[in-house]
Image (tube, rainbow, N blue to C red; front, side, top):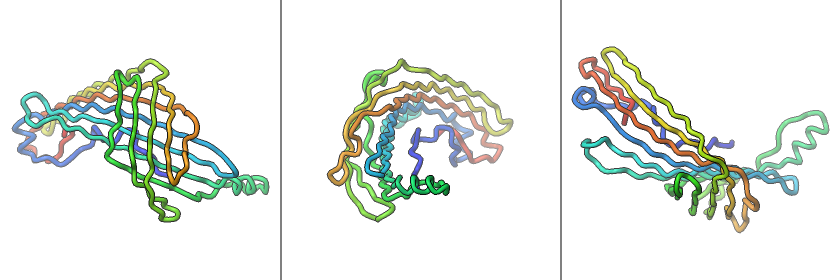
Length: 228
């Protein structure tokens, strides 16, 4: 079954368990900067349809001034290669049965390899070796990835501000500024001696800047938090 690759690998607004005393003593505050790149390559040859889905990120988690702790850097790359036998779908359609093709290979892998963005996401490069597993056959192999994203549009901004007071529990303020840039993607994805991305494709470059500040009320007995 085809997985949906993560568009953003970190849930910025997910509630997590935090001590009530911490909520009462000090406002929770953080800053997140995440830069992400996405691409989908599609091709059909000899009755086989192939889709290559790529998602890669480079993120910084920054505590508030005076909160202690250093900047945390994280990166994650996900890759999936799905091969489907389309001739079965064509035969079914000709007979009036319809239906989709048979998945003959479904390779998936993840590695803590960061994206390498440049400038204001004008471009990005990904070089990685990722262990893959074919969920159909159980075969294991490494895929060698070398891809380059080049922005083809100006950045589109989507600023969002959220303020809410939960009486007796928490006051929450968040600000985010997401930017999106269309891109053209080229390079190679080599698996078992085959390049699965023989041509270029359209892609997407995104940047997420997120700031969260939470003031809690420990006397409520609440032990949940949003800023982490």
